[in-house]
Image (cartoon, rainbow, N blue to C red; front, side):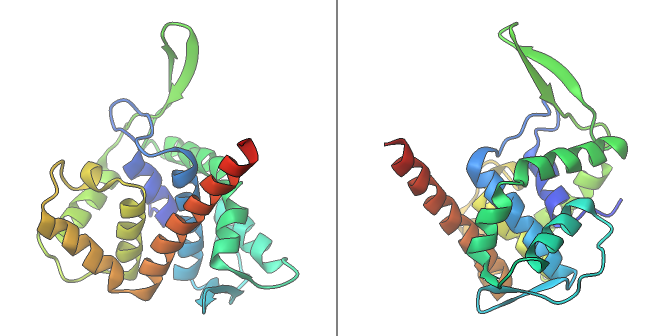
Length: 218
């Protein structure tokens, strides 16, 4: 199974044994929206021109989540910025996660496990059933970050940025990140304008979202 950027981020965000999400909440949901936009750019369905999203190709991606996002962008009455679409698609992130988790279950990569918290509250977790795909992904990322592998695809650079903004570096690479490793991560993200822009816009959108929510509450 070839995993897209959203599926890769979801897998890396799950605790393999417990099946619970290590990264979750508003920041993760914004990152999921960012990963979907990035995947559409990688597939040349849309492009980023001066932080404005433009549609390049409306043919199906054969992925219901990506097709939904592509159609939403295409049918918009006018072109909008990356930050605008992060806000708009953020609202669909949880549904996107649910769809992709089910696909990973169908492909026998994850399995569904029902449990209770404090013997009262029901919860659903998704532990790993077959770690082959994730093991390959982690090995590739570890070689890039910790072993200075120099052949880095645009998809990998974007994913490294997504991992960084979701604060998953310790989970994916190693518990105690050295100063040199942190510098290496930042250098890789900055080496490509797309990976840097997506990572930074996710962070900015999340910050703005929190400010808006806080203002409404108070």
